[in-house]
Length: 207
Image (tube, rainbow, N blue to C red; front, side, top):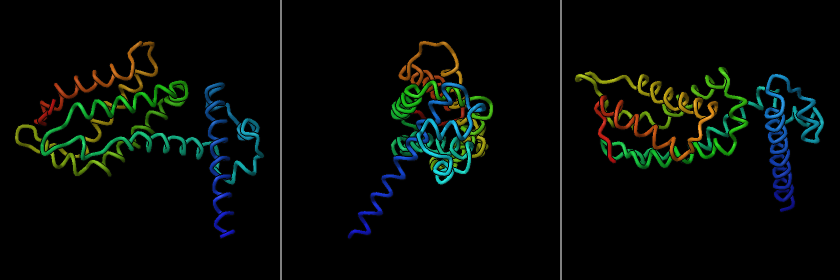
C-alpha cells in the first residue's frame, strides 16, 4: 500500500516538473524565439537544474517535439471519425464544429503557434496531421470511395490534399492581421471545401 502511494506521489511530481519545463519553454519562445533559447535558460525559468531537465527531455528539440505531439493529440481527441461520416456522406456541420474547437485551442495559444510555425514548424505539423489522417481516417476515406471520371482517387493524394488545406489556412490565420475568429474561419473553410473541391471529387455532403 505504501509502495503504491509513493509511486503515485512520484508520478505527480514528474508531471508537475514536466509542466513547469513546458511552461518555461513556451514563455521563453514567446519572449525571444526558439533558436536563441538555451537549456540553462529553460532550467532557470522552470526553477530546476540542468540534470532535472535532461531527466525529462533529451534536448531542446525533444521538448519542442513533445509539445507538438501534445498539441496534435489534443486536436485529434475531438476528431471522432464515426461522427463526421455517415455512409458515403460527410457531415459538414460536425466537421465545422470540430474545426472551431481546434481553431479556438490554437487561438488561446496564438503567440506560441505564431512563434513556432516557421517553415520547419509548418512541415512538422503537416507531417503529423498526415500521419494521423492515415492512421485514424484511412478507412473513412476508403469508405467514401472518392472517384473522378470513374477513376478512384489515391488515398495518399486525399490525405496530402486535406492536410495542405488545414495547415495552409491555419498558417494564414495566425500570421495575418485578420480579425476573423475561430467560428468564422471554420465556417469559411468548410464552405470553400465542402461546396467546391469535395463535391467535384464526388463526395456527398450532408448539410
